[in-house]
Image 1 (cartoon, one colour):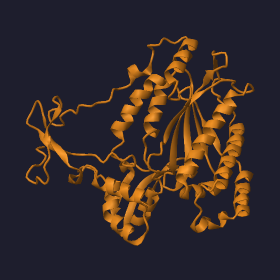
Image 2 (cartoon, rainbow, N blue to C red):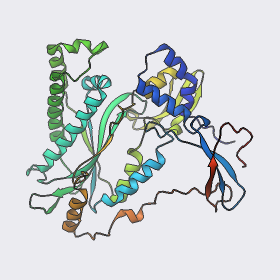
Image 3 (tube, rainbow, N blue to C red):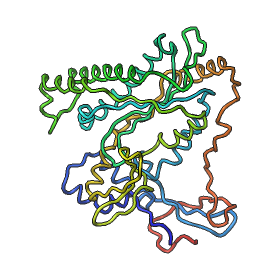
Image 4 (cartoon, rainbow, N blue to C red):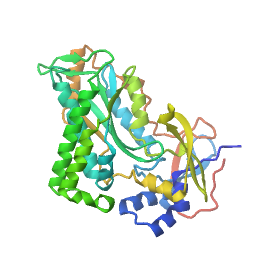
Length: 384
């Protein structure tokens, strides 16, 4: 018996109307709910396609292309990875993660654009400042930063994943590598990150850019806000560096898992019914063991919608040597200093994006679009 597949879209169709009727839902979150529930259904239209080698034909409905949709990230992710393969250098790569304490994360829920922006700016400035210090690396580095805002059980936990080559360009434009297996001291990174983040947050508050409503209303008082920052400053901010990757191809595989991920993939959802939603998650407190979480339908939607980003907010950013303005020139300089041939690139080992779809019936032909679908056409069904 084939495995039943459950989707976030099923949860929205089953519990979305009740959530909208009983709670205030922002226009951005309403748009996500509407797009995900309509994705690859007749509501978005489609076309009829047939195999160029056999008689197989089917209806292909359009995707919503919403970046929060679990079904719409595959092609976008593959194209992004194909473009990034040429940026990789033949050096050791490191994975550094920056996160924030709960006192600050709670403010981010009401000020996503401002706080997530500060998270990007503070973490990137921290890496670049410490790397440029002659006591550490003394070089300009480059890296990709990816924003995630969730835990495995969909709670709010904003953090940035940074993938960094283990070295950089010195002021005299030569290449310097970090120590093997060690990038930068995480305690030094954490202390500077905390200072930069809190300074930027205070500046945003003084400019009147923060919304502080509901449970956060007391923070409208300057002394209460200062006390909140003092509590955050008293904590050790978590910055950790994972073991280095084995090589550029391992970096690509890692990025494939992280860059276009949404809060929860459909594959983790075990059941959807009137009694709620069950899904798998890894429990870090139990050494990453898998466990099942069950939530009432509306609570699942509330948690999922916590991670809807402001419209137009970029969640993948490039810095330093990988910055968009001078990436090609600086990477060419790095390869020259490393003695790597310009043609040597992991791109040759990355599977290209498959724009043509093989026929699922004969396995040899390709699916060809025949005509746009005029809905409804209930008599036309999948010929398989």
